[in-house]
Length: 63
Image 1 (cartoon, rainbow, N blue to C red):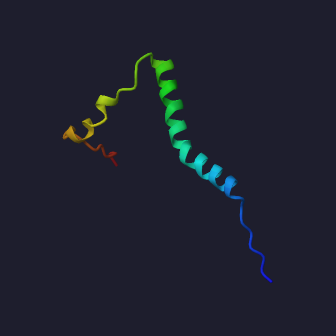
Image 2 (cartoon, rainbow, N blue to C red; image 1 turned 60 degrees about the vertical axis):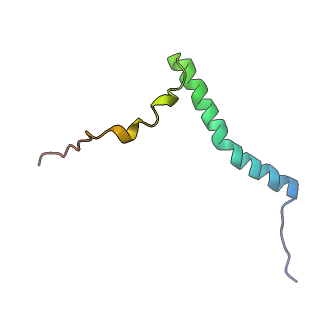
């Protein structure tokens, strides 16, 4: 007869919670490092200025 292997629900929920929290923890660490190294807050107001850049130039190497 086949044997079914399952993990305990508490362990599964803990692993899922850690998987979901990791990006938030990484963002928190980067923000703290940014503040300690630069002394300024994270520039959140300049995040949407990418679409206003119409002067994008591509430099190709000369062969």
